[in-house]
Image (cartoon, rainbow, N blue to C red; front, top):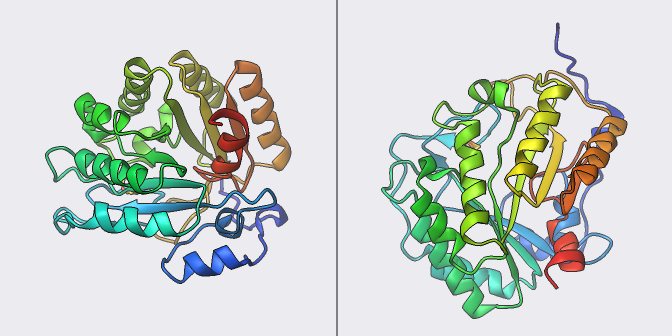
Length: 286
Ligand code: SF4
């Protein structure tokens, strides 16, 4: 089947505005369709930002991701935990997502770097809720535990797609089972920590495969799921197989609620941390 490539109306977004947006934008560069909502605080004024740690070169090469790949990325900046935590504590944020490239070149995958950043941030600004979106640390559960015990509020790790498409969509070192193991371990060692994952639709998955993935996630007590449309970053990346309709996204939202997730965000423009702050602050963490 020939992939459908023209952008449907529901995927076109408005230009972001707002004072908080302008303030943070002057410090950072980022590309996301919801950026005005996040940094401006959206209609409920919960300001959220996502920060990428450990450089801009990833040791992996997933077929949907626009981050640069390198077998030998630059060494970690030892001052980053201090500098990042200091900067974030001044931005007036309610919720921050710390994420990173995958650093398979570092023995602990950068887990101590992550943990240190969280500890410092919680010292400087304990009121900011912290979500970490980590890689799979090659399935090393000690690394997972290091981050899980660092004082964060939400542990996120993305499965990205259904099991059958994982070898095609993600780097070959990532597997669906390994990702489930990460999420399962977090809940096992820290049952009160919220776990979260994200799935992109439109890469060729079937409805049955999505249903199976959601059930597996619920079986290992994953609390939150976000489901969004895959958008091709450049022509060098894998093609969009299909643009899923808003109605179908609503359907997955209903399915998720029925399965008993604490939170499910499902929509064409939903991204990994879409309105996470608003939801967690309003419903779960306070
Ligand atoms: Fe991108 Fe993460 Fe894959 Fe690296 S591991 S290529 S940052 S999605």
